[in-house]
Each structure stands twice: as structure tokens, then as C-alpha cells.
Amino acid sequence: MQRQMLEWFQHFLPDFSVQHWSSRMYPTQQGRFADFTYTDHQGYMGAALQGAGVSMMPYWGRGTTYHIEVKSTQGECNSASMFFSPNQIDMVGVVSAVSAPR
Image 1 (cartoon, helix red, strand yellow):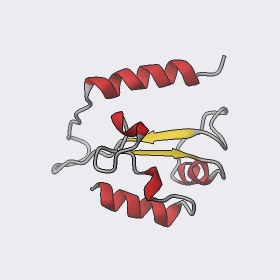
Image 2 (cartoon, one colour):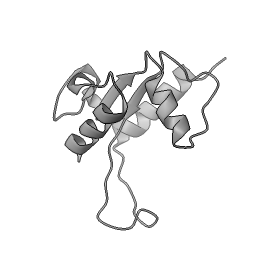
Image 3 (cartoon, one colour):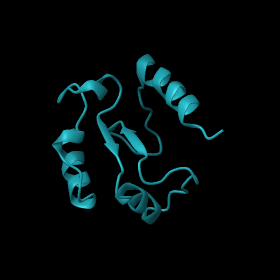
Image 4 (tube, one colour):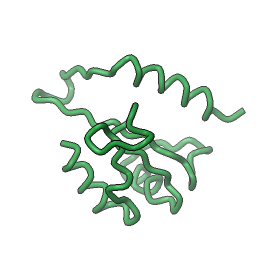
């Protein structure tokens, strides 16, 4: 699944490369908590999210770093549960506390 997502990101984000693959399958410093780590220097991710109907926060813009976790299910999307490790849950709290505008 991560390989497919890498190919999808490369198709839609011109500056996305294998260097953004930060999972244990392709270890980097960020690999402790995200499958992909991408800093949106050119605004490509922001534009893609807006195009998909995601409501953007005013402080999301060029330079925002996205930590993307790939999850999959064998069942229906609406009825499937997902697993998050304690480390991933802790990281959400840390990033949210650090990233929130003051």
C-alpha cells in the first residue's frame, strides 16, 4: 500500500520523491511516526487538499510539514476501524501543541 501511495503522491505533487518516504520500510529520521514526511515548499499539497474539498486552516501554507500515515482496510471504509500506535497518538498531541497558532 505504501508503494501505491508513493506513486500517487509523485503523480499529483511534482516535487514528491522517494526521499519523502519515511516509514520503517524506508527509514529516515522521521520514520518513528509517519510513513511519509513532506514539507510543502511550493504549495502543491495545499492545492491538492483544497481541490479535494478539505477545509484549510489559515496557518497551513507553503512551508507546512505534513506527516502522512497510510492506513488500509479490507472492509468498507465507513465501517472499518484503524489502529494507531501509542507513539503515533503521542506525536499527534506534540505536533498539535507545537503547531497551533498563538
